[in-house]
Length: 231
Image (cartoon, rainbow, N blue to C red; front, side, top):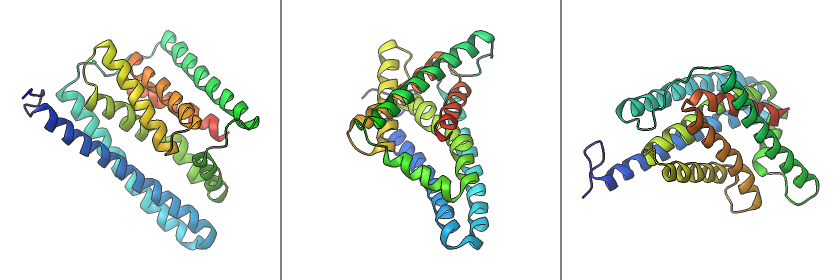
């Protein structure tokens, strides 16, 4: 049986990575659940909100530290795509801005389709809007500051390095397509035109990761997109 770089059979490595990646998704969902609990308490039990927010901050810090550490360990062990720290230049800033404009264009088309009743407002976005109304500061801070970091580490960094390690062109293309599709499905949970819109944002972010070879550019791009969506 073919061996992976870790010395384990390739299929066994794939199973282990799949279980670990699903585990990352699970512990991230626990974090968002704590935020949802704090939001519901803002309406029914306002005196308990600060206690729950304290738990959220501690858990979020530990979650971010753990997933960042795991991402770096994976790159140290096997990094054929040469992911690292790409120097920030004026040219790369313009490229990042162009990708942001592309994401903004997708959002604009999406908004037009919703206003023309071709598509409905995503349930995910409706829920976020309701949460922001109940607990504005913490929901906005989470969506703009924390979510971009953790989602980029999970959906781009760890996912592509686990399942699409090779630096071949077709592998990179397939990796971006699959990661974007999964990113969309976890936001929509159904096969619908809205899935394509969410996936398109994921495809842009996946392309950015392979273009810049630096997760920090992805985080910045995701940050700007989420900030724009909330505004």
